[in-house]
Image (cartoon, rainbow, N blue to C red; front, side, top):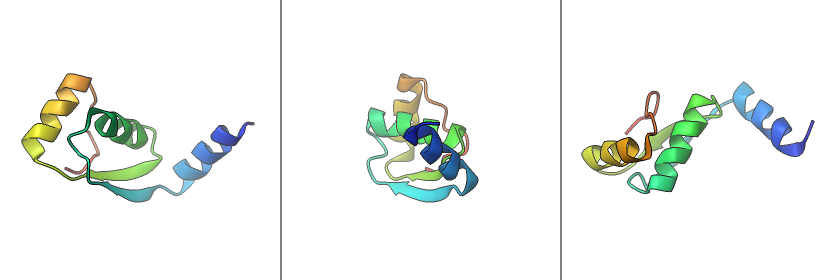
Length: 68
């Protein structure tokens, strides 16, 4: 098992809360969606909720489980 696999397994066993202030940045939105979907973290995105959701739609990133 590689280092990334080990880190992913540990993250999934004890997900932490992450608060990301760049909630309207497409890269951050994609990362938040991935981290949440894989169960690695509980993510809160800061920003204008309408713009964050618009960015998520444009990136085809689901925000289920992500707090905005």
